Length: 240
Image (cartoon, rainbow, N blue to C red; front, top):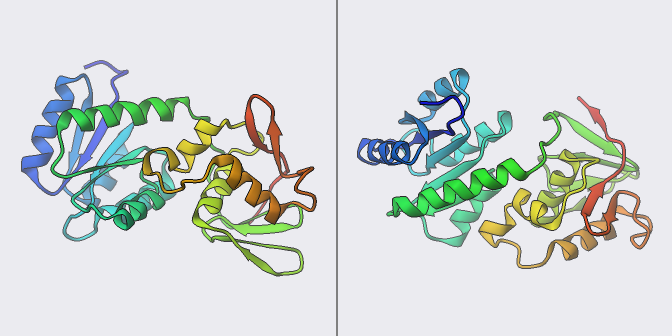
């Protein structure tokens, strides 16, 4: 075992799924750890560096969606959900709580392996976001709680954001000052894999500017970098 092996945590309450999957990943060059639920997951995350988590959704006790939400509040670890749920709304919930991809049970291990490699490759290419902040953030005349799908102006009037607009604005804020191209923004908002938002990044940027900017044609907050993408270029003021 080498120090630079990618370390995957497999979380599934079914031993007959968890252990063969761990062996399969080991045979393809990964280091693995296993957990049967939330408590074992927390123990492993407290003592080991994990590069990616394969997480079952339907588990007794705390389910995978709850575990995913908790992990994403504290860590920047890519997560692939294993789900027996095939409805679009169920997949959307998983992606909205922070999962990077999903695979529906029963699954082919080769497909899961390909998804793992894809997610790891994309996560390594993405710029690191700023240290997670708590409380409210102010920028210009706006105030925002990143957990809420709205922005509030200096007149205390709240403006609602769609799920797509909210995810996009949060991604831009968390990478303030960094130019993000369209592919990176698609990955950060989970749009590439989930196909939740059939409208382009450019259209979503345009709608955000209509809500944020005094003059959308001459934006102050979300600026275009020709040939590069978009950058959130206003100073942030975080408040507890």
